[in-house]
Length: 354
Image (cartoon, helix red, strand yellow):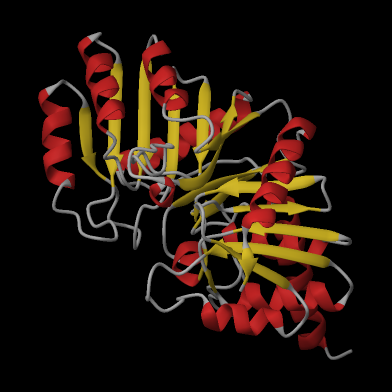
């Protein structure tokens, strides 16, 4: 072999070895330039969290959240896309009045307009809450995460809105299907705290937890790994189907014999279906797609072969995976998996073919 070629090979092998050593750490690099579709850090998918709990909306109602806030004895840290539920806001204010460390980060430009966000922040500040807009480093902060007393992390699909927390005053059409994971595993909680602190202080997040699914860090990589690992079944509830890379991965899984069932929201009224092109792309491979018209399908879950699941804020869209701040988690707890699968089957039964 030519000396220069041998030298190049040795350099490449040395760099590759370093890369393997650093897998799962909070930083990495790639050869050949940047690639938005290539995970740049925390790229190893975890085996899934055990010993966690799940709640389901609209079944469990807002008391899951208001109860957690009222039970806090030291601190409540919240990083969320939308905070509009009056009972949750009141509970946060009461916690601040009890001299708890209450911190809230809100996205300033949520879908539908952010005219009320500043008013909410001002109201919270007046009650003693430390409140601020979320970091401008991301296209949107779409995360739905809460930390109670530095010991329990809530990783959710739902905003803290009336529809997201099971309010029924407006009829069934105003209620969402949502899930939340309640996690007391120290490694997971500390990683969520690290992300919160980084976003609060406008610094890069440094964390090491292979079970967390974080945009724009590793979400795309985890989604691709999950779909690629499926051997028998793949159940998905999602709000969006708008990413060609994920759609192709689903098609590939179906072609190798995986039975895939997907539930998406039904279009509202006469509105066109924003997921229509994605649905068309995956249905040609015999992937079964239904749309739920009874509850609004705001959930974001994947259940792979009944043994591992994703639950979090990430949508199946390029912006969500590659540009937003999002937070999710991998779970392998058998009780959680049973609940996710049984709820999915209920939703599947009331949904109609897309």
